[in-house]
Length: 262
View 1 (cartoon, rainbow, N blue to C red):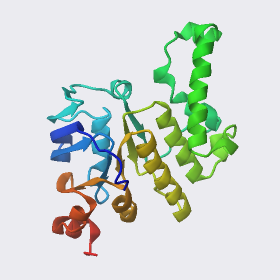
View 2: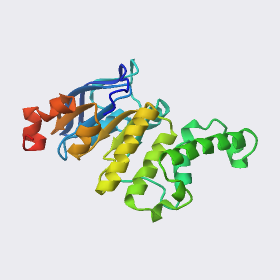
View 3: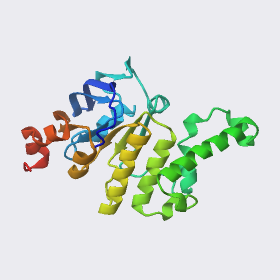
View 4: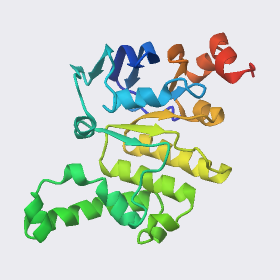
């Protein structure tokens, strides 16, 4: 955790969120907030509702009950496109890249929302579209340098090992220049070295770009090391919320998730 980083006011506030599918309750009366520039972790056992909560934040699901405030405004009926336009980007548990395309082109797709010229000009690659493309490519090259993947920039994603594919997916999300970055198990399936690299990049994104990060992660060591605050879900209900130390010593969390008090 970077003690020098200034954490700001609440940027995202979720109040009394409840989400059901048919008769099955995925989330029940959950409230928590996210502060600007912080790393906010969501943890809990499998089936706790963590991914459902991310899906509520970025507009995939609309809760039946509750209220979401983003930058002080009530966010009613926001879909994924509107969420992305408003500055919320997302990576997924299962890598969702274009496998036949190069690293550069995959990250470039993250710039789509930033493109101003109309489709016809883009198709003709003329005038303003050409200038815009050059500017977007410059931004993408900066991200490639930042993530230290210059050596694979022209490589089709399908040829890359899993850890590098995860890094490319992070790059595509960063290409949208999000205010809030949602990371759904960014280190799942990685070896120790790959996890260390991803931790470093997450901390650097937060520190250098000032991006607010909300992440789901099962590796408790990672969560406790890099998070400012942690919210804990179990069976769709909130059972803990606070700093890593507060959560680590919360008996409900120990019983439900950690198993043993360390």
